Length: 262
Image 1 (cartoon, rainbow, N blue to C red):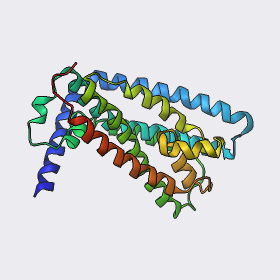
Image 2: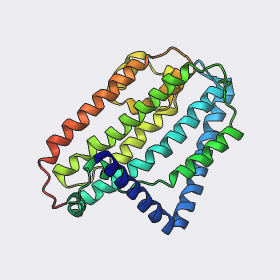
Image 3: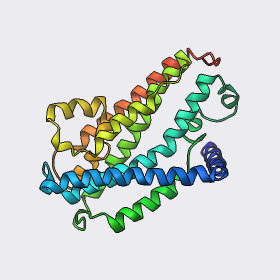
Protein backbone atom coordinates (compact mmCIF):
# COMPACT_ATOMS: atom_id res chain seq x y z
CA UNK A 1 0.00 0.00 0.00
CA UNK A 2 2.85 2.34 0.87
CA UNK A 3 4.55 1.60 -2.45
CA UNK A 4 1.34 2.41 -4.33
CA UNK A 5 1.06 5.74 -2.49
CA UNK A 6 4.69 6.55 -3.28
CA UNK A 7 4.14 5.72 -6.96
CA UNK A 8 1.10 8.03 -7.05
CA UNK A 9 3.22 10.83 -5.59
CA UNK A 10 5.94 10.26 -8.19
CA UNK A 11 3.38 10.28 -11.02
CA UNK A 12 1.87 13.48 -9.58
CA UNK A 13 5.30 15.15 -9.60
CA UNK A 14 5.91 14.00 -13.17
CA UNK A 15 2.56 15.34 -14.43
CA UNK A 16 3.12 18.59 -12.53
CA UNK A 17 6.56 19.07 -14.05
CA UNK A 18 5.29 18.28 -17.54
CA UNK A 19 2.85 21.14 -17.06
CA UNK A 20 5.66 23.44 -15.92
CA UNK A 21 7.73 22.64 -18.99
CA UNK A 22 4.78 23.10 -21.36
CA UNK A 23 4.05 26.55 -19.88
CA UNK A 24 7.57 27.57 -20.90
CA UNK A 25 7.35 25.88 -24.30
CA UNK A 26 9.51 28.46 -26.09
CA UNK A 27 12.28 27.95 -23.55
CA UNK A 28 12.00 24.19 -24.05
CA UNK A 29 12.30 24.49 -27.84
CA UNK A 30 15.16 26.98 -27.58
CA UNK A 31 17.02 24.75 -25.12
CA UNK A 32 16.60 21.77 -27.44
CA UNK A 33 17.89 23.66 -30.51
CA UNK A 34 20.90 25.04 -28.62
CA UNK A 35 21.79 21.67 -27.12
CA UNK A 36 21.45 20.02 -30.54
CA UNK A 37 23.88 22.57 -32.03
CA UNK A 38 26.25 22.04 -29.10
CA UNK A 39 26.29 18.25 -29.51
CA UNK A 40 26.64 18.59 -33.28
CA UNK A 41 29.75 20.78 -32.89
CA UNK A 42 31.19 18.33 -30.37
CA UNK A 43 30.56 15.43 -32.73
CA UNK A 44 32.28 17.19 -35.64
CA UNK A 45 35.30 17.89 -33.42
CA UNK A 46 35.60 14.26 -32.28
CA UNK A 47 34.95 12.93 -35.78
CA UNK A 48 37.71 15.12 -37.25
CA UNK A 49 40.22 13.98 -34.63
CA UNK A 50 39.47 10.29 -35.22
CA UNK A 51 39.50 10.75 -39.01
CA UNK A 52 43.21 11.66 -39.08
CA UNK A 53 44.29 8.13 -38.23
CA UNK A 54 40.97 6.31 -38.34
CA UNK A 55 41.50 5.26 -34.70
CA UNK A 56 42.05 6.62 -31.20
CA UNK A 57 44.03 4.06 -29.22
CA UNK A 58 42.51 0.65 -29.98
CA UNK A 59 39.13 2.18 -30.84
CA UNK A 60 37.97 2.55 -34.43
CA UNK A 61 36.23 5.64 -35.70
CA UNK A 62 32.79 4.00 -35.45
CA UNK A 63 33.49 2.87 -31.89
CA UNK A 64 34.40 6.45 -30.96
CA UNK A 65 31.06 7.52 -32.43
CA UNK A 66 29.30 4.96 -30.22
CA UNK A 67 30.99 6.33 -27.07
CA UNK A 68 29.89 9.83 -28.03
CA UNK A 69 26.27 8.76 -28.64
CA UNK A 70 26.13 7.06 -25.23
CA UNK A 71 27.74 10.16 -23.68
CA UNK A 72 25.08 12.47 -25.13
CA UNK A 73 22.03 10.28 -24.46
CA UNK A 74 23.13 9.45 -20.93
CA UNK A 75 23.79 13.12 -20.18
CA UNK A 76 20.27 14.08 -21.29
CA UNK A 77 18.72 11.30 -19.19
CA UNK A 78 20.72 12.29 -16.11
CA UNK A 79 19.65 15.91 -16.52
CA UNK A 80 16.02 14.89 -15.97
CA UNK A 81 16.88 14.15 -12.34
CA UNK A 82 19.93 16.33 -11.65
CA UNK A 83 17.86 19.42 -12.47
CA UNK A 84 15.46 18.42 -9.70
CA UNK A 85 18.33 17.89 -7.23
CA UNK A 86 19.84 21.27 -8.11
CA UNK A 87 16.49 23.05 -7.71
CA UNK A 88 15.86 21.32 -4.39
CA UNK A 89 19.13 22.59 -2.93
CA UNK A 90 18.63 26.07 -4.38
CA UNK A 91 15.46 26.20 -2.29
CA UNK A 92 17.40 24.88 0.71
CA UNK A 93 19.95 27.70 0.29
CA UNK A 94 17.14 30.28 -0.06
CA UNK A 95 15.32 28.97 3.03
CA UNK A 96 12.26 28.00 0.97
CA UNK A 97 12.32 24.21 1.30
CA UNK A 98 10.52 23.71 4.64
CA UNK A 99 6.95 23.95 3.21
CA UNK A 100 7.81 20.96 1.01
CA UNK A 101 9.35 18.95 3.86
CA UNK A 102 6.22 19.01 6.02
CA UNK A 103 4.28 17.08 3.38
CA UNK A 104 4.15 13.25 3.65
CA UNK A 105 6.70 12.87 0.87
CA UNK A 106 10.06 11.11 1.17
CA UNK A 107 12.91 13.59 0.88
CA UNK A 108 14.57 11.26 -1.65
CA UNK A 109 11.47 11.27 -3.86
CA UNK A 110 11.28 15.06 -3.52
CA UNK A 111 14.93 15.48 -4.55
CA UNK A 112 14.69 13.20 -7.58
CA UNK A 113 11.20 14.00 -8.88
CA UNK A 114 10.07 17.26 -7.28
CA UNK A 115 11.44 19.44 -10.10
CA UNK A 116 12.45 16.85 -12.71
CA UNK A 117 12.27 17.51 -16.47
CA UNK A 118 10.25 14.61 -17.93
CA UNK A 119 9.87 16.21 -21.37
CA UNK A 120 13.62 15.75 -21.82
CA UNK A 121 12.63 12.21 -22.82
CA UNK A 122 11.38 13.71 -26.09
CA UNK A 123 14.80 15.25 -26.70
CA UNK A 124 16.37 11.91 -25.78
CA UNK A 125 14.18 10.06 -28.29
CA UNK A 126 14.80 12.53 -31.12
CA UNK A 127 18.57 12.45 -30.60
CA UNK A 128 18.49 8.64 -30.42
CA UNK A 129 16.70 8.45 -33.78
CA UNK A 130 19.10 11.03 -35.26
CA UNK A 131 22.12 9.05 -34.05
CA UNK A 132 20.64 5.81 -35.42
CA UNK A 133 20.00 7.35 -38.84
CA UNK A 134 23.00 9.60 -39.35
CA UNK A 135 25.90 8.37 -37.17
CA UNK A 136 28.02 5.44 -38.35
CA UNK A 137 28.21 2.88 -35.53
CA UNK A 138 30.04 -0.46 -35.26
CA UNK A 139 28.19 -3.69 -36.07
CA UNK A 140 26.74 -4.95 -32.78
CA UNK A 141 24.67 -7.88 -34.06
CA UNK A 142 26.94 -10.46 -32.38
CA UNK A 143 27.16 -8.76 -28.98
CA UNK A 144 24.06 -10.28 -27.33
CA UNK A 145 25.84 -11.58 -24.22
CA UNK A 146 27.69 -8.31 -23.68
CA UNK A 147 24.49 -6.27 -23.55
CA UNK A 148 23.91 -7.49 -19.98
CA UNK A 149 27.25 -6.06 -18.83
CA UNK A 150 26.48 -2.84 -20.70
CA UNK A 151 23.05 -2.43 -19.07
CA UNK A 152 24.43 -3.18 -15.58
CA UNK A 153 27.24 -0.66 -16.18
CA UNK A 154 24.76 2.02 -17.30
CA UNK A 155 22.72 1.40 -14.15
CA UNK A 156 25.88 1.81 -12.05
CA UNK A 157 26.72 4.99 -13.96
CA UNK A 158 23.29 6.42 -13.18
CA UNK A 159 23.74 5.64 -9.47
CA UNK A 160 27.22 7.15 -9.09
CA UNK A 161 26.28 10.33 -10.98
CA UNK A 162 23.12 10.89 -8.93
CA UNK A 163 24.98 10.09 -5.69
CA UNK A 164 27.72 12.56 -6.62
CA UNK A 165 25.12 15.31 -7.07
CA UNK A 166 23.47 14.50 -3.75
CA UNK A 167 26.62 14.07 -1.66
CA UNK A 168 28.20 17.39 -2.53
CA UNK A 169 24.90 19.24 -2.40
CA UNK A 170 24.32 17.92 1.13
CA UNK A 171 26.93 20.49 2.22
CA UNK A 172 24.18 23.06 1.63
CA UNK A 173 22.35 21.67 4.68
CA UNK A 174 25.31 22.80 6.79
CA UNK A 175 26.46 26.01 5.08
CA UNK A 176 23.11 27.25 3.68
CA UNK A 177 25.07 28.15 0.55
CA UNK A 178 24.48 26.56 -2.85
CA UNK A 179 27.50 24.56 -4.00
CA UNK A 180 28.51 24.71 -7.74
CA UNK A 181 28.09 20.94 -8.02
CA UNK A 182 26.64 21.04 -11.54
CA UNK A 183 29.73 22.84 -12.86
CA UNK A 184 32.19 20.39 -11.28
CA UNK A 185 30.13 17.40 -12.39
CA UNK A 186 30.03 18.63 -15.98
CA UNK A 187 33.83 19.04 -16.03
CA UNK A 188 34.28 15.46 -14.82
CA UNK A 189 31.52 13.99 -17.00
CA UNK A 190 33.02 15.59 -20.14
CA UNK A 191 36.00 13.22 -19.75
CA UNK A 192 33.79 10.20 -20.28
CA UNK A 193 33.72 10.40 -24.08
CA UNK A 194 37.48 9.75 -24.10
CA UNK A 195 38.13 5.99 -24.49
CA UNK A 196 39.09 4.47 -21.15
CA UNK A 197 41.99 2.57 -22.76
CA UNK A 198 43.87 5.84 -23.33
CA UNK A 199 44.32 6.46 -19.60
CA UNK A 200 47.14 4.76 -17.62
CA UNK A 201 45.73 1.77 -15.71
CA UNK A 202 46.93 3.07 -12.32
CA UNK A 203 45.02 6.32 -12.79
CA UNK A 204 41.88 4.49 -13.94
CA UNK A 205 41.98 2.19 -10.89
CA UNK A 206 41.92 5.15 -8.51
CA UNK A 207 39.42 7.20 -10.49
CA UNK A 208 36.98 4.27 -10.67
CA UNK A 209 36.53 4.61 -6.91
CA UNK A 210 37.05 8.35 -6.47
CA UNK A 211 35.50 9.88 -9.63
CA UNK A 212 33.85 7.08 -11.67
CA UNK A 213 31.75 9.72 -13.48
CA UNK A 214 34.84 10.28 -15.65
CA UNK A 215 34.10 6.91 -17.32
CA UNK A 216 30.31 7.21 -17.52
CA UNK A 217 30.20 6.56 -21.28
CA UNK A 218 33.59 5.01 -22.06
CA UNK A 219 33.51 2.06 -19.63
CA UNK A 220 30.01 0.76 -20.54
CA UNK A 221 30.94 0.92 -24.24
CA UNK A 222 34.25 -0.83 -23.52
CA UNK A 223 32.30 -3.65 -21.86
CA UNK A 224 29.80 -3.79 -24.73
CA UNK A 225 32.56 -4.05 -27.34
CA UNK A 226 34.42 -6.68 -25.32
CA UNK A 227 37.65 -4.71 -25.12
CA UNK A 228 38.62 -6.53 -21.92
CA UNK A 229 40.12 -3.36 -20.43
CA UNK A 230 38.32 -3.40 -17.07
CA UNK A 231 36.07 -5.80 -15.16
CA UNK A 232 32.55 -4.63 -14.37
CA UNK A 233 33.15 -5.63 -10.74
CA UNK A 234 35.10 -2.41 -10.21
CA UNK A 235 32.10 -0.36 -11.28
CA UNK A 236 29.68 -2.38 -9.12
CA UNK A 237 31.88 -1.88 -6.06
CA UNK A 238 32.17 1.83 -6.85
CA UNK A 239 28.36 2.12 -7.07
CA UNK A 240 27.90 0.43 -3.67
CA UNK A 241 30.53 2.70 -2.10
CA UNK A 242 28.84 5.82 -3.50
CA UNK A 243 25.44 4.69 -2.18
CA UNK A 244 26.92 4.10 1.29
CA UNK A 245 28.73 7.46 1.29
CA UNK A 246 25.54 9.22 0.17
CA UNK A 247 23.49 7.85 3.08
CA UNK A 248 26.27 8.55 5.58
CA UNK A 249 26.78 12.13 4.39
CA UNK A 250 23.01 12.72 4.42
CA UNK A 251 22.65 11.56 8.02
CA UNK A 252 25.58 13.70 9.16
CA UNK A 253 24.51 16.90 7.37
CA UNK A 254 20.72 16.82 7.83
CA UNK A 255 21.20 17.02 11.62
CA UNK A 256 22.76 20.46 11.19
CA UNK A 257 20.04 21.80 8.90
CA UNK A 258 18.16 24.72 10.47
CA UNK A 259 15.89 25.57 7.53
CA UNK A 260 16.76 29.27 7.54
CA UNK A 261 18.77 29.42 4.32
CA UNK A 262 21.68 31.71 3.54
